[in-house]
Image 1: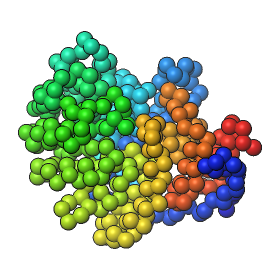
Image 2 (image 1 turned 30 degrees about the vertical axis):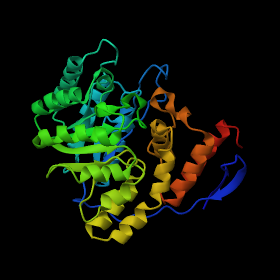
Image 3 (image 1 turned 120 degrees about the vertical axis):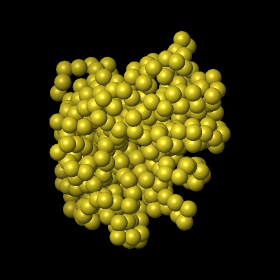
Image 4 (image 1 turned 90 degrees about the vertical axis):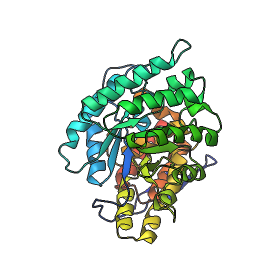
Length: 386
């Protein structure tokens, strides 16, 4: 197996020998859990642009990655924060992404996809009212439904700014849920992922905020397929999961504790909608195949080494996790470059990438170690490491 010299946590260089990639069990749906991977977008590295200002997408590679997820039995959560939604990818680009993905899904019988609808075309500001937020949500929900898509109701920066009390959240969500054509997934994205969402649901205390979210869901349970909470706290997720109305799913958004939450306990389990499923999709497919056989031992054995990898990718500042996701896609040959929308490939250090490389290898997720080593050496050279 190829060897590479990598900086360690102290910055000193030391050799690292890669391991053979793992051959995961064949993933054949249906699975006992719904598993949606929030997929990234591939930038067009050769486009004429100002990377901090322009958004140029390589549509062929972007859609090819969604086909990769579907081929492994996973569903796709489209145009979410993993796709740099509101963090490089604007609403115009998101609409095209959703349309192209819905078209591509037709070639994959049984494929599942849900798409983000939010208010990111409405810039938060002192003059933005709750009514403005409602109209913005309506516009995006109508657009997704007009394309034939299912809705993931994304958290709103504009609402976080405009709301004066929990009652404003109840009013906005009540209005939108009363109008949607089919049940949606509500996404509660924590401030660790997006600082602009601090105090969502009208309270800075997550448990108090949960009361408002549960009140909304309970009042409109027939219009809620499930709720995804991304708070990186398994205890809070379990507490909310046990209080959901019958028939409403909990989609874990916990990229730190997903294995245990998906496995569940005597009181229930979580389904999943996760950004980490993008880079670890082969392992997820294999783990769910094991779960289908009620083989919990293999399920945990496959996912256990992916957890340190995920915790590293999602380490604070958590909002930069997308860089690690795209880095993994490059190492594994899903794209020919390590360039991101908004130039976000610069948000992590070479030590961070080096440790990510080691952890991905340990999880058996470098599918072609020779290619991964070659690409890692190129990145090291850019950072002055020969």
